[in-house]
Length: 98
Image (cartoon, rainbow, N blue to C red; front, side, top):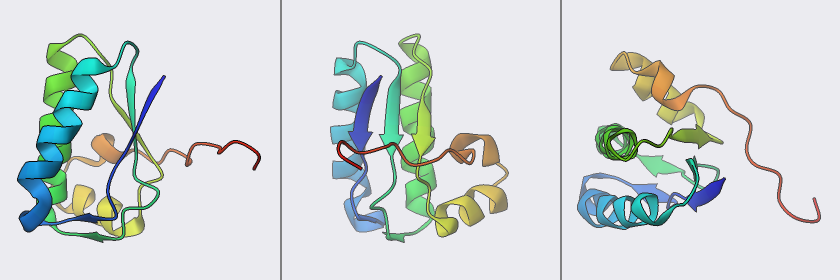
């Protein structure tokens, strides 16, 4: 599992730079990438677009993409846009020593 942390803020202003970094991390992942949304607190619909692009990129590379620790607002936006399966309710990953 390749754990990739999402930023605390993912709005239109951060979308392009965040997407570039995430796509690089997904491409570098040897195993199925897991996006950790635990710290994601400020977001808008751009976050959904970024995550959909990440999913497309992972699938194009033959990798399954999972998102864990989705905040309620991300789940609400995913539901609004009909892409609930993108952010399926997954628990946040356990941290070392927790």
